[in-house]
Image (tube, rainbow, N blue to C red; front, side, top):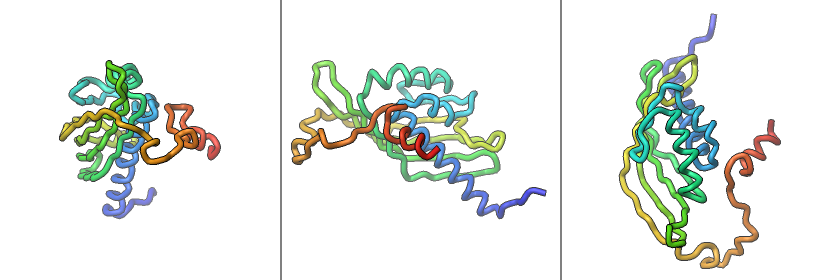
Length: 179
């Protein structure tokens, strides 16, 4: 007979597994790891980003085509995660702060910043939590010309290690060492 967790403990486990999906999604977007993004959704899921609305398969294809053209680097921060678990279903609201470094048509480098919220319907199927329905709600945006980078604060950028896209990024290299 399988052990049954106290319902309060099970809720904590469920919430932790859901947060892990949110963080894996952010990594997938920022590292251009499109299979990681896909793994965060059920196969029949839908995603409504506003700039894209459709099936998860179409969303991942859209992201793979457009993210590399739009931004040289992105960083997604997920916070204020509120999760209401009800059996094998959960409603999850997460705040996201996303920064996108890109080059404008006139050659100016700029940062596009947005504050938004993911409103997700999660489902646990075959013991695994994934997104079944996502709605991105935009709260604010700003677009700033990049005035200067590290030189303004006296840092020699040649001494720094920068994030890259999968599989060249340092987190993928570290994961290979741990495996």
